[in-house]
Length: 494
Image: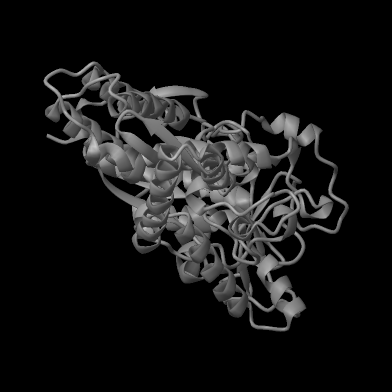
């Protein structure tokens, strides 16, 4: 029996606006699609948070025993500036400015994307398709939508007819908008556009003579609209209907709304059972923006070279910080919050490191099974990582009480405790024990501190309290705290 058969998992569905009991279309199997990056610049922190949310979801599904096909695309063509239907392709624009080939831009920033996610210990998706690798599929969908009367071709471009679609379907059901409001709030066309109505969106754009990225089609040499690629790739690898589609909150409208319309127009069915959206990031209470200087790039954390940071932070500390907020909540970065998270992360890892050294007893003064159930309940409540972390720290408190002789644990319960902590901390949350990842350096540090602890013990035995205090205080100044107990002196890193 797989774990998922005993779990009541509830997920907030953006389409219904409420938490729903999750039941996959095919028992034991999950199809999940997440909108990936547009690779024209370095991956930004908002991307990292969104993809981290779905990395946790992917990990938890795998932990429960599901077989998961996780598809996350690479947008390497067709994404116009400001998410509009006019203007210049972002990748082509970057290539023109840098005087290099568009695919050089794509390669450069795809590598950066993968390198950054690897540093944060992301699992790779099952499939990572590209928009340019699926031009044929996109053209076929456009033909189908045209044949069914939900699109029109004009001057070599093809547009989706929102008003026509809305006669039989509900355009706006994901974002809660209706076409009448969209019409009221949209300026009239100025004659510069080929679109019949401002709400219509591009399925295919005719390329201007100077446009670098172009492909032949029945309508013109051009390129697909941005929204179309996700419909083409999700349905190709997951089917006309699949379990989960995710992305950032900013993609709900128009991108995901347009995906639903395209899929319903082409296939006649709603493509996704559960829509999930991760919320945005702020920095010091304000929206991140390069134009104002209020931003941090992922690599800044590792170097500390940013005016908002007082020191470097490890990728696992940043990951731990992000997971202390629910994926649907706005997350605000600040240096003080990161420092606090670093202390919490180090305390968690120090506790995990002492688990093998605990003395066992014939009784347990902690309800391990109830705690284990609480951990699963947290993740089953729409992947509530903040509650899970709070439960982990309940175990941290107990473990340290056992170490200090103020509580006790049996061998059996210690084994359960150890397995559950490792399952959730490393497999589900994807954290890494920095000490265990750098065993040689960790052992040398430990040996050096043990020498100083012996010197301090000798100083105290000789009543040289000035030297004893000096050793303690100088170790504390570099982040190493000594703890005196009945069994001797131990240390932890802050």
